[in-house]
Length: 484
Image (cartoon, rainbow, N blue to C red; front, side, top):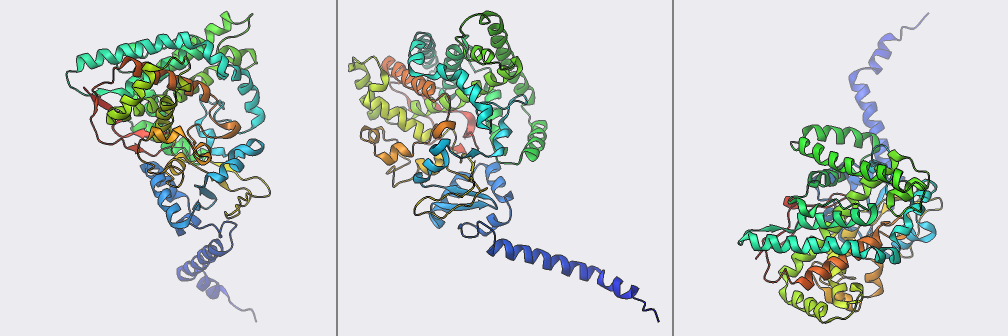
């Protein structure tokens, strides 16, 4: 006799049974993730074992660094911050992650910073793809070549000092935004030196490309998202941006400039040894369209980080007149031609770089086969995303006592750990390709405006500078102001 099993099967498929099955499956996955996954031995908050969403939220709201800093204080120098992501605060790990044998491969999320659909020297993952591009432009960043370009940069510095003096004389006690002016200085320095045509941002009052810079910075909210999600969220947020017309206008200015200098080089540097960044790329066989994208990328990178650092340098000297007097005396009395040979000025610049943290968050890399083992730290398995960030390194009181204080004198006799943990340009072969130019520009600018004594009598408007901790730090209020 046949057995009617339909009622039995229907019973199994009842909502109660289905719910129970799902609950058991989720509980099983929970327990497996809790006790058996490859990173189960890495300490961190429980939520980090199951989802990266909490971390994305911290990044979006701009508090990621301070939260992870607290986690390091609780759990130690190696902390799990997502199911497959680890943050390291010990400078002893920098060599393995970023330096030895070229460092670990960049995380795929760097592709979120492609420009116009092209991998840039910054965003490229594969060293073989990056190498010919970096090799083509590397001579532009050699110390001797930079020194040769100083006369052109000096003209920009003269304009910077004159504009600061003009704003000082016309302010009548009103606040003067030195962030905007410092960004203009950085942009004009980069463009006149690398591309052979000054953008003339200093002479344009409020920098015409401010909205482009701010929009690029805001993209750092989404930097750590998977590529498919990044594209969606970035497009969605752009539609809601009430500054969209200004961003478009500002971006068009950058694009038009980049196109113009590349097209000029196509004609003028065709049958000669190229002397510009874009000319060298074209001579190496890089397409016109990609060369334009590389120029746009460098214009942002060279403006935001250096401009922010210079503004913070000015602000700190205005806050500490005794330190300003000391560096002014050194500059005025010096007979040295090289600003980087002045010890206290060097301390002022390096301390400003340490505190500015233009990129405060981690630079993620992928642990290679064999895993990562730093003596005294937990082993991190292959395939894990691992990184260190300037916020934790530069605020480590064991390396930088009183880390939140502006103390240029600490650099008069720096420890090996201080030099190791100075992470403002990253580390290793993938650190900022323009670091020599950025450094020289900061020293030259600091020396020029200190020698002019234009900052004399300035006081700060706000008693602290706050940042939003995105991949590129956003200055709260998008202004750094002083008044006389």
